[in-house]
Image 1 (tube, rainbow, N blue to C red):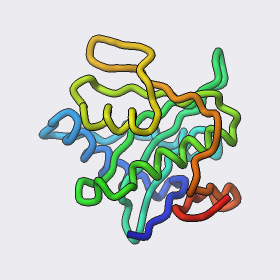
Image 2: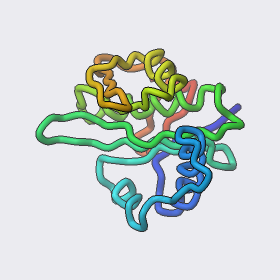
Image 3: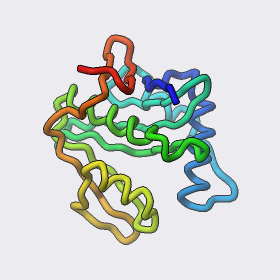
Image 4: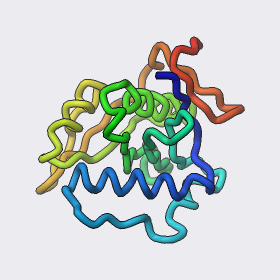
Length: 170
């Protein structure tokens, strides 16, 4: 399947909310899902370092939010992450992670961090496959990180067009 990954813009808010609802159902078993609070997503779309990456064909396939922190320590935090159920297992989630990690390198972030629910064993295994290790624990979730040392092969971020394409070489 051919798809591209780009930074989200304000016009993507509805589809991001839809994917967020799908994630709530999958992870939490939520019957009724909620959208983001009005205005919340704008902080990812204001031209700052934090952003949301969207994988798409003619429709959105998934998204990943990447929050950049500079103080007191520098790191990127991967927060909400969803891939449509119909296209899971096709490398879209992996491509989103690689794009976020490549972006973190561009920003000279020493590490990428995330939380994962202890009960979400599929996501935990996914992150471990991508080189994330547990370095903290809360009652219901693990804190994982990956030290960013070298670029991933096979992916290239075009910062002029804010896109990431599979198969492009550096």
